[in-house]
Length: 392
Image (cartoon, rainbow, N blue to C red):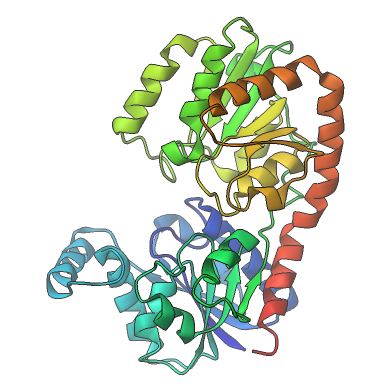
């Protein structure tokens, strides 16, 4: 089939800026390159780091870029904003779609895959006969969404990253039969226990008990509650916390009200907490290897965070929450699942202390995690992704 993939309009593909969605797109494009299944054209925002990326040499995957930055492009976006009110998405995203549609009108595609932007369908169904497929990574489509029924009806197939997101879609149609769950995958060749363990590079000692938080540093990810739990464990000075990530994607160092509050909360922990900031995705396994336990304390309905998959692939016992799609990723054999109730901070501290005091439990959880990780490799994900497209 001849397929077009419309990305989010924020980060580039290949995923030179990071981004979970963009990495997942890369995975199925790599699989397509290896197996030569479809002719795929990806529409993405431009970033200068893509220029020499080897993926652009593919004969079956093609990349078309929309330039969004620079004074001329910013001026055009502003003009678009002034001349197009009441758009579905932010004007910058709608401008991206506007530019993509110019090219789609000139092409013939059998299928158009919308990566986490089901609202694109409102315009696309008017200009193309291609079948529209939504790949939903978040709660972008439920009965509360604007034009929910119209967007749902426009889709031939809806792929969701978890059963949790699938259930959100099915609030629109309880007799739904077009939505399928395709769980995310990761590169198990990269995330494995053979990564380097160089604690001394961060000033960590061998006897330290190291927790790791990896992900965006924002309120929804539960980092504030984790730091509060660390403060409850002040008697255990060798329990350290490593925080990997920034407030958004890439080298974002913007200060905001939340990060100001977070820094104040972390102030008493200066000797026990390390903020690494943004790290290139390729470096994360080496940092995870330094840890004894991964803490993923999401306080929102996290759809299917790949940080959970990465932690269990590294053989880390996991402390996380019963939110969103997280319970689909782990079992009680390799993770402690907590409720995000009024006792959440105390429960976090207790779970950390339990694993701190029971190394044999950590070993058992690590072994269970390594076994479960085999279910979520990127090849299985990509294979299931393309299998779902068959027969549409």
